[in-house]
Each structure stands twice: as C-alpha cells, then as structure tokens.
Length: 98
Image (cartoon, rainbow, N blue to C red; front, side):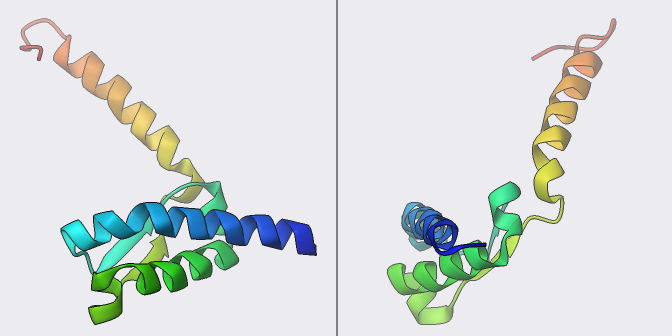
C-alpha cells in the first residue's frame, strides 16, 4: 500500500473511532467488534483501537479491545440469509407472523 492509501485508511479508522466513542461511553463494553472488508486491514483496526481508547472515557479508564468480527466480510451475507430464513419460517402455514 502506498502513502495516500494509508492516509485514507487511517482517516477511516479515526472516523469510526469518533463515531463509536459515545457508544462505548454509554454502554461500557470490554470489546468492540467491527465487521466489513475495511476492518480486515490491520492498520484500520489499530487506528480505531488507539483513537477509541483515547477519545472515550471508558477507553481511558479500562481500555477497550477492538477486534474484527469473526465472520469478516461474510457478515452481511449471513445477516441477509437469516432475514430470509426468518421470513420463510414465520410465513409458513400454522406459524404466527409478527
């Protein structure tokens, strides 16, 4: 990766950390799990972790681990499949829908 690409990835990590900081302060988790292709890049996770632990009170007090979701880039696909499955099961004859 070249300089401009690294700069953009770091900026993305900073933006994600800024968006997550209020939620971390509100909910107080020990771990934040992030999903999507961009979080497969270790640099992005490192920047998010550094900035999140700097920007949030919980991060400063006890530290918050930032991890890539175990399903990685397939998370969206799994979520979509579960919605389809749920729609099929709840719309089956004899099943009560929502």
